Image 1 (tube, rainbow, N blue to C red):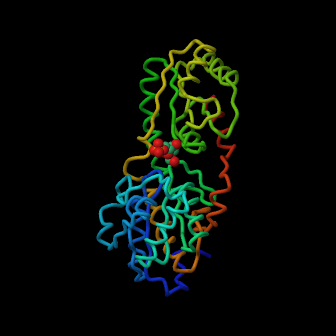
Image 2 (cartoon, rainbow, N blue to C red):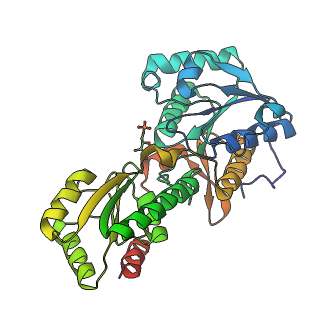
Image 3 (spheres, protein in one colour):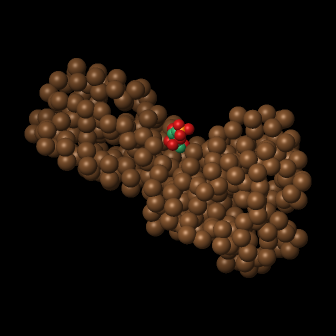
Length: 336
Ligand code: F6P
């Protein structure tokens, strides 16, 4: 069984690793890097931090990290290693530069903190240049197959719920219908969990086809039940399109409500990580080091029913993590 408590570390040959954060930042990335650095120290392995994700790797921006370099960061949002979405790394030329930097610094394995794009790049890099990579899932979208939760999701959920609670106050005071857009790219986890936790009337997800007529009906029924204000959570990747357009169309169909649109946006990516995210980051960061020392290559370290699980990167990036449709039904029932 994989896990840090399994002390049978097979490889005593690995002496030098590197860690980077890539793609959209997520609260808890710092806590994960801290766990990586300190677990390396525990196992007497040198660890280098790469600044700016793949861009930094290609430019050779590597610096040795000591345990004190990661002090006082467990509570910080963002990533002190910086991050980027790199076009250059999608080219073979870019990846050659990265391989040269790894050779120069005698790095024997990489720990990649990020989401789908990060792991896609890591997998290709491993195939082309043979560098062992272990991924740590970090994204507020929670859209990675092979892990129940990704680092950053819980904090973003709490931020979104807090924002919706505040909007609820003004919505109730004015008897208004609010359309609140949350992030999540092509996935609806953040929207669905926010909708249930904030008691929204409706949620629009990328995973489910919804017609204007269905939405209008729910609102008409709500109005009949004397629901004077309503909150609709709109996933940015929903199937009907832009939140402003949806709001206009529904206003013209239902009419009864004074409507407003609020986009929470990048607020959801920042802030101090929640306790749950710090815990997850500490467990996954530490276990990523153990995975590499145990000889694993090209896997993502995730959490499955509260146990550590390894999933091949190729499977993590190709498979879709499905929304729990019972949760959607629950949100509908509780909004009656
Ligand atoms: O993947 C995280 C995420 O915040 C998505 O929810 C969102 O669609 C995207 O990143 C925004 O990316 P950027 O910050 O590059 O605009």
